[in-house]
Figure 1 (cartoon, rainbow, N blue to C red):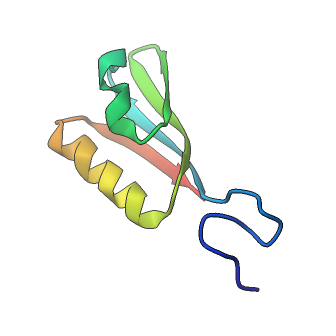
Figure 2: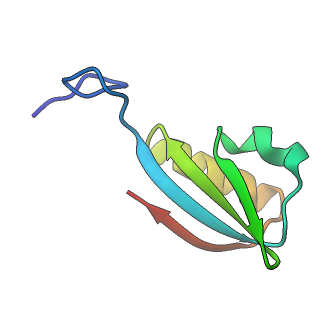
Figure 3: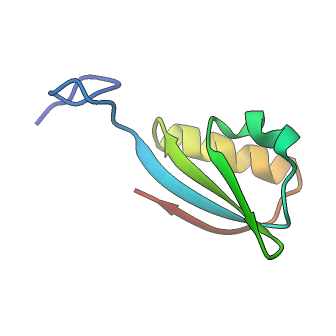
Length: 78
């Protein structure tokens, strides 16, 4: 079934749910760099949670994290 860009055939927004676990506790001031994903910190780690537009945006975010020198522990998407 074909779905229109940005939503399904019922008008609901679609996207790529994801969770990215980073080593270290990331500062709130960096949150705008993470495409609207929310920050959840605990025990020396930060988890980014939310929905990205697509695989391309996920790749862009991962590149940004690497450019910032952040250690990515795990990625769950889909």
